[in-house]
Image (cartoon, rainbow, N blue to C red; front, top):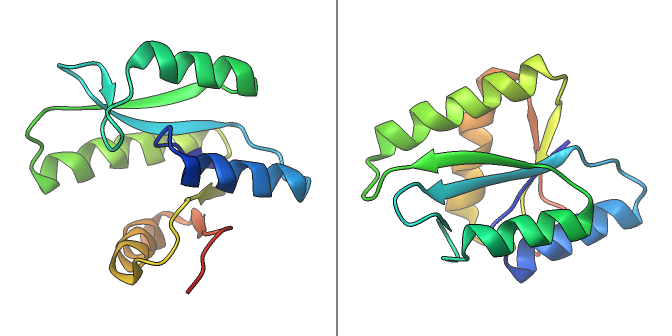
Amino acid sequence: MLVSWSSGKDSAWALHTLRGDGIEVAGLLTTMNEEAARVSIQGVRRELLLAQADALGLPVWEVPLPAPCPIEEYERRMDQAIERALSEGITHIAYGDLFLEDVRAYREEMLAPTGIEPLFPIWCG
């Protein structure tokens, strides 16, 4: 399993919840602004991301993105990450989403044809 990692509290809580349930996590899937070397959502510097991953004992699966990033390019690059995940036996990706139903529906729709199951361990909806 991978955890979609924004470097923020929600992804950290999702990881904590999974580990508390005894679920093994293989890595942190993170989109990065390739020019700024920062996590796309939170703007966290790559150095801090790597320090977080080191403290957690997990590898980072970086998905570099241009800025701005058209949705077609985002989806193409995420498809490459999903192909890698499948080739490495990953069956689930967990997200720290709390309540945005449209975001959850998008993630479910994008993963549906891949066979990878999305999980939402801290979903409040």
